[in-house]
Length: 241
Image 1 (spheres, rainbow, N blue to C red):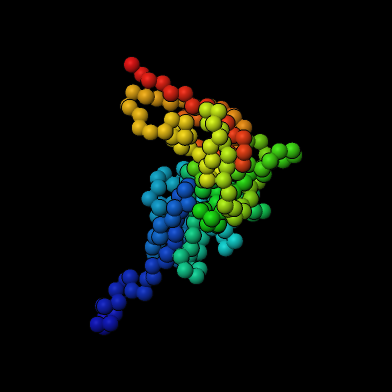
Image 2: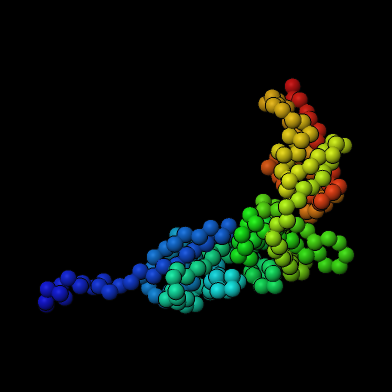
């Protein structure tokens, strides 16, 4: 055996192929794989997920839409740059459309995740749920959770954000907010500004909201999408003994 042959060794010429693997929040990390052509189950294993049968893989196509890669289906990593896939837990997936393109996704998604699926800048764009028949389309806030398991196929569209303000009513007083979505904590601060002792708690109801349901109770950490005018909040302060 020559010196060159000894130096080459069994792994000589082996190439490290790159793949970007994303999770349900569309957060991607790059992983190197030895094989140019892999199975769906290999991609799941490369992501460090077990058992592989409990997950499903989607290839991210050039137009941003998703196509399922079955467990024993081959996927070629020899594209230009790092290939891109999404691995989700294999719960039921639901068919949706965003800007006219078809996607499959898990039952729950936030506005931010839907924007990332659409491939638009999260901060510079809004996303709306189309309302069939009469009624205004619904703005989906970045942190708002949408249930995709409702009857029918949900359709969304994105649009560039327009700078505007929103008029809401908090405890019968008109307040102006700069965003189409407000949090429980923001509304509490508008209704009861200042510092509060640890024994003070707040409860809140709302009505005439843009988000679905249009009325209900909002708890700590919650978010509601508001209309341009007329969304009403009632905040109650309780001092615990």
